[in-house]
Amino acid sequence: MSNQQSKMEDNMTLRQGLDSFHKAYKTHLSHNKKGISNEAQVFFKSHDIAHVLFGCDISLFGEGTLKIWTIFGTTLGFWKHITGYKDANAFELSKSFTLLHSLKNIFRFLFSIPKIITRAKQMHKPWNWTAFEPYLDTPIAEIRKEFNIKILK
Image 1: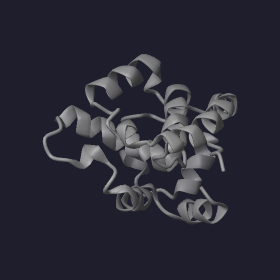
Image 2 (image 1 turned 135 degrees about the vertical axis):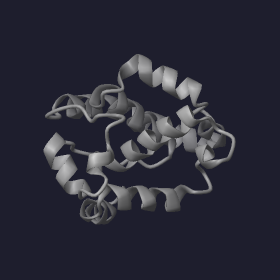
Image 3 (image 1 turned 90 degrees about the horizontal axis):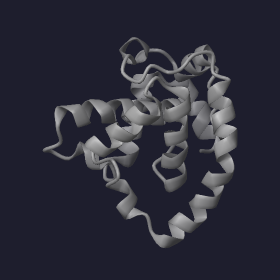
Image 4 (image 1 turned 90 degrees about the vertical axis):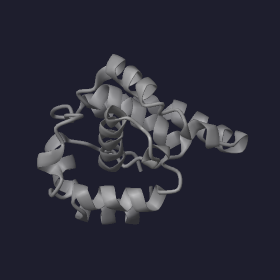
């Protein structure tokens, strides 16, 4: 994410950021297709909110970093994370990654894991995976400040 994009997102509310995220990736989000369960829809709404909050795109790097943020920086935790992704068939996106894309992103991701874990552990409190409604009309910058979220740039 560029610094300019980050600054633009900071001025948006979480709801606006979510709308922007959906517009930017609408053709790539398999969970927007009809026929997925209500549980999967609820899971993916929280997942998409986390993408916006933690500043992650949908590249292999972005998805990987989001998984680390989710495990260490939210109330979802490791086992619920694994179960939620499995139940929601959230691995669909990974099928679209080319070998070149994977090679470009995997090492960058692997080297960033310690930094993400450290930043997640420095948060003032974990992001509540399911109780995001009160924050939807709050600027992203305010939420990040309240939780001490320092996204990767």
